[in-house]
Length: 330
Image (cartoon, rainbow, N blue to C red; front, top):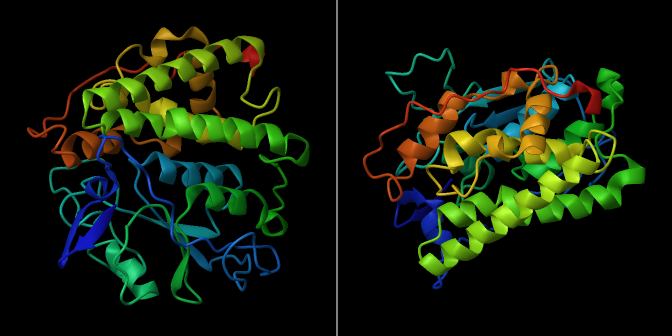
């Protein structure tokens, strides 16, 4: 993520601070939709027909927003239809790059498979030659039109949820009509207070802003703990996109946000229902393959030198995500 200022790419967090020390996240810029017949979606232009091999996904394995898209690519059996490139976990003065850490031994190929780019911002400038805005992951790229379709993760997962069903014959629906209102309400609350709440806590630059953010965050984690006492999933008794949107924050929480972002009032493991829920989602077929904790820890602790100037990456914590959970509730 970055902003072009006087010819150099800077960490996007500098762009988004307000005078009272609060972190404000700008909206995504590219909001087109892939549809089953190429008709326009709810925003942007039409012409993006669901076709095998036409689209390419750019992700960071560290990023919770990008993790969402990898999850839906897995759940909806799109791996043979939508290819992927992974950026380096290190986000420094040039933003996201394809420059691999020579000391990394994780088996992850850091390369732009389409253009062999060095920097992610080159993709944005292929779409708009004079682009100088924020550079974020994920990016959904159209190889036929040679441009960005979308860089809004919440909309990419809905494209993956339904646009390619006829191609894959996978009709599992994580945004069913009967639950849309409930899912939308839950998503809004979880995004504002938890998904983005950890960032509002971690990137606060005044004590007051931090206190407000961390208090709101844990009030809502407490709410989730009580909710999961009454029902197995966010929207009731069916697994939906609301669960996967929450999961990508929960799975990073104890390893990264507790220490690095000072979200340390409690850990997820201290919440019995949330921990059980997290383990159930992590153990869902194919999901653990989308989680790379080494990239997560490397990105946050190494990239944010205003928070961690020594760039020392902690060895721990040891996470318990593989042990049995209360399967009767899921």
